[in-house]
Amino acid sequence: MNKRVAALDLGTNTFHLLIAEVNSGKINKIIEEQRHVKLGEGGINKGFIAEVAYKRGIDALEYFKSVMDKFPVDAIKASGTAALRSAKNGVDFIEEAKKRTGITIDIIEGDREAGLIYKGVRAATDLGASSLIMDIGGGSVEFIFCSNKDIFWKKSYPIGAAKLMAAFHHSDPISSSDSQTIWNHLAEQLAELKDKASQFKPLQLVGSAGAFETFAALETERSGKNLELLNKENYGFNVPELKSVLEKIIKSTHQEREQNQLIIPVRTDMIVVASILTGFIIEQMHIEKISMSKFSLKEGLVMELTEVL
Image (tube, rainbow, N blue to C red; front, side):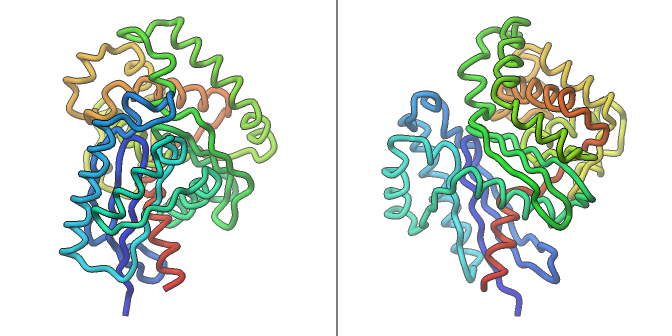
């Protein structure tokens, strides 16, 4: 009998719930929910969870508990990432969540987060002999050089979209000077990553869900592709088209993005710095093949949970 498990990925911007079974190494999703809690809003670069964001997070977990009550599972795993591991009141949040919902939250370090992302992406994506996985979160960004068989090197950097936006995005549309400051900051922070790219020579960049789902939707609209492509586990980008999408986002105003139904509200502003970051990686890594995987950390948690049951 297949075991049914629940995985909760509690990120800086979004809380995710996935209830699933694994059959012959393939994830069968029963139900998938997400709540855009923006846990880092108002406090991410100050090291605390602001009161309103704190409440949104607890409310989301209470909702997830009601869903799990309707779809009983054999095991639950809840992992807190950048916002919870760096917040002074993160422990208070975890204790209140346990008291209100019975859900036990484990804080995971960036290295383990990257490993789980790899497990999730590998379950749905052909990573070939050498790929670079990139997962843009609100508080951190994970990079994994890997193949279908193994991880070569992985690291989590505290340069998530919410952090970059709070620190550097001060104009509408973002000014060229703000963009250049972000670019310079990334060059400083990611010098080691560039060296590793020269060592491992990835043949493709795989964007793990999140912002890359928005990029895929915008590229699909721009190029007139079949919208059904967005429903698949993987999406292959046309690189020149993707670059055009990134450039258009960077030049756009808040109002333009807000009115674009393909950009979900939680990404209205953060998608700008995510676009600058993605453009930086494309240029610096010289990768000619780019894809998006809908699978990420929560799918990695599911794979790990079902391995031990």
